[in-house]
Image (cartoon, rainbow, N blue to C red):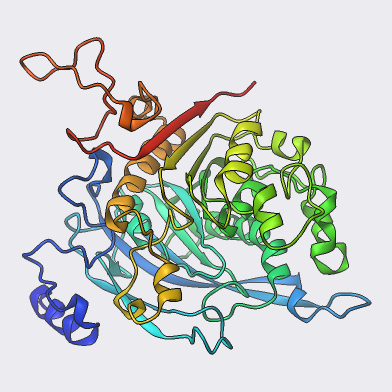
Length: 451
């Protein structure tokens, strides 16, 4: 089918808000498309993007949802659906696909029923990969609670176009479609991340017989997590939970994720934590008043995080919180090189795609995606820029990308633009690299080194 015909067909299938989409006209209907004011590294990379769906099973896992009040917790084979994006043959940005998801907050919420919707993407289903430049670093993406593997397609597609294999997990019991016991999410996030890392390494190894064979360098892996995904990513990367939190999961199962009780997979080389949940203010926000000094963590737990980590948070976050929430995690992960990107006046939704058209009739569904003080396409572009700089630096060793992260002044509103007649910066210029004139506004970026 010709591309123009396919776009016309899609326009008949998706909500009216997408009806004007055409291949010759730039459109913000496709999450991740660059606005005119997008920073430099938000642009798509040189590759077209392929996408495929994997169905994985982690055998013998604790069935927290069906745990009895007393006695042993039953075990089950835990299913996980994983979406994988990868560099593919073709021109950058040339793919066309759809991602089918649902709104809502679980299968039995009458106020927010599971309403199907479609997100458009610029990828090609099961496309032939670009094998010549393989293997590629691996990025594992973990959504919020509730969420889905399609919550951040603006970022997953973007990274794949730049030479990464990106695997986004549907965490069982934690998606819009199957949200169940919160304790399952508390236990399983880091476990799921580690399992998927192992499976991607197996499938991506040369000679595996998988379509991903030879594509993946799992020795260079980053975890990207949003909200509960950030909570799990920090733990998987070494930030062990404190003993105070064990009662929140039946049977003492959370002990396995306590400080000193697990080993960090050495293939994890970096973490991006968008609004990671679990800090002191976040725990108290759900009525739990027996947490550690930093909620799920204490000093020893945060000291276990030793890989480079980028925190991204709004300074008005009302779920994970900034003061008393994410900021103390950034400040006290003393053994990690870490960055913190702060969106001024942003709340909790610093990571998702823009709100889908299907959410426009529901305030709660709309506000699951939207930031009231920010245009989401703009916020998405900035995330693409900084995540690219961070991962290129830490997974690919591209030292020149450090200049995008080591900004001359931490508050973008304080930038001084001082240029020579030919446009080159003077010694006292404090502009942020990669941002066009007058576009670096409303952000803060901090860096702390290991002690």
